Length: 269
Length: 272
Image (tube, rainbow over the protein chains, first blue to last red):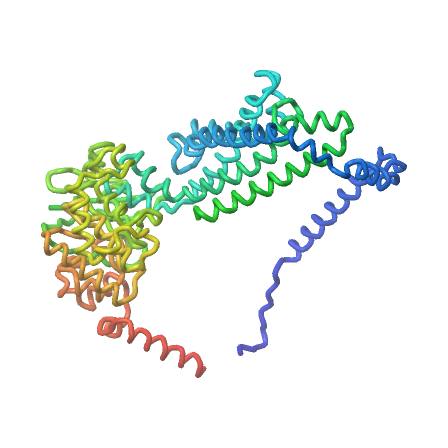
């Protein structure tokens, strides 16, 4: 349509940006090559070459599964489910107030309470449940309780972080409208904020429960009860055909929990 | 009834939204507040119920000086002022009934409102208001199931559920089609007449403002540049409010002719 002598040119990036990006990619590749060298320095290649034979050897011992072992697994499986569910419950109950204290639009004090709430979240998130369990087994002794508390502590950060992000993303006009009626602070939370974050809350909680089922299956490795305990003893006695059964039970549990969480999320959204 | 004295608002960013605004609104008067975008219309009505803090000046509702209040007394004053919003600002995931009853939040305890156990008188009033705005059967629907016009009706019912002494409306028709806009404006005008309720309505549409308001206040860059009966809104006044424009073309028309105007423009573009 418009054509004249001084045609304007347009470029996606300036030459300087092109150079910077090229340099960025170059260093990334260089770093990868360097790391690969570092990583393979101590590898004994004879073992790696042997890997397929070893794998098939263990595979052979794992099959056929020893189905009779299932009967000994029902109790630990039940324990595992309880650890996950009660742990999630504790985590969620503590996470709710923490999330409201951490969200910019609901925190009572941006300079004191908010950093504190964020610290709680970061602390809880930065420590793996297995490490929490390790600590707790030392503090409150081995067993289910250590597992439940470990799962709970780890869940606080996860749930609170996602929940406070949901709180910060709400539609402020609804809050304004409820405040304009003369509602008190708690009534504003009850009528304008909670209805908006409720679907997110259920989604997050069920998602965390689903993760916790997977995590609680291995907590027994450090003595915190559940299926992991059986896994530990089977591994140490080289009873590979029992390990298979445990793996299959864990797999089935995870599949079921995924299905449940998918259903719940469908129902609340 | 409502009186503003030398009201000014300067935001933290240094933007002067309102400068020395003074006027009063007697009972039963419907005021259309017009002006270009950014003239301070929203800031002005939000200063009245203190969703925005005024920087200086005072506002009286009856005997109460609104600008002096805080905490509990401020909440008690807000109960007396109903507000209607542009995007309806209903709580989308609550039912129509809960939204209307939220107009009573300032009157019931936190515990009662949490359990949704409102006094029967409030519930009766909510039903009759829903009937009045034409949504009698929809009380159990969730707010997000309703159309735009229906949502704004719920918004009006929520404001009236407060039994307000003053109604504020922030662009109540901006998200609605022309026909629904007129219906909503007629409804607001109607309820104000029935209750002898004064109202301040922020509105972009000059024709709507002229048709449904008793009095027009024109705001430009945070100052009142026109204040008079709707019939006195001349081309000269519109130019003072909005700047120079061919007002004939805008004023005689509502939407269809605007379309024609756009269409003729499109043709001109094609020809060149």
